[in-house]
Length: 241
Image (cartoon, rainbow, N blue to C red; front, side, top):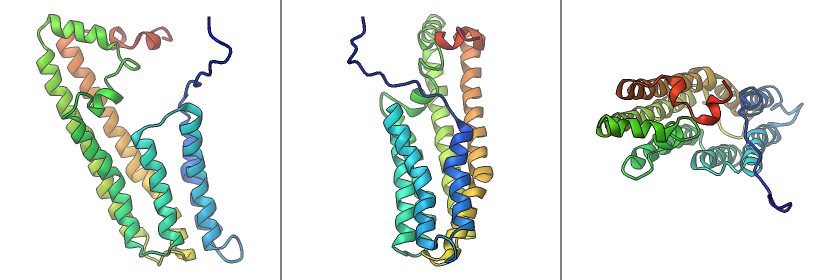
């Protein structure tokens, strides 16, 4: 019997349209349209625009207990962007920051391959997505564990490559779009434009690459075990089908 004092963390259901609205569209509109002195002014617009993704990220962390390295980097990224604008640092630092965040994540992916808990295994090959026990049992039975681990390592390299792509593209976009001095109305407008452009040019291609990596991992599992996707889905997912 569950104690009445026991607090449970609510299930986190992905809300991509809310994420897009709060983290991309609203901040971009504020920065591009309300940075003029006749509206909020450059400083207030920057604070308000960045408050949306920062508050949303904190809400997700506190509400759903999603205290993870990548989420923390996201919050740090928003805070650094605000710091660059408010302290009126050289706009070149924004490009460095934009490139550094995904580069750090990619480096963490590579480092994790030398530990017992590679990030690809944690994110894609885990009991919440696949029936890991069933897959591992079949791999042992067919003496294919070594082959699978080699493919998993290769998937980790591909995964790190997606962040390298993001790092390079972030730097190029920041240098290309944000050219005005920080702390100015023009800087805010360019920051909002960069935020909007980064979604179709960086986020969507990165998501496609992630899907291709999962497909690569899934094809490996099918080839080595003979199972169909439905047969190796996590039990709680299979029940919903």
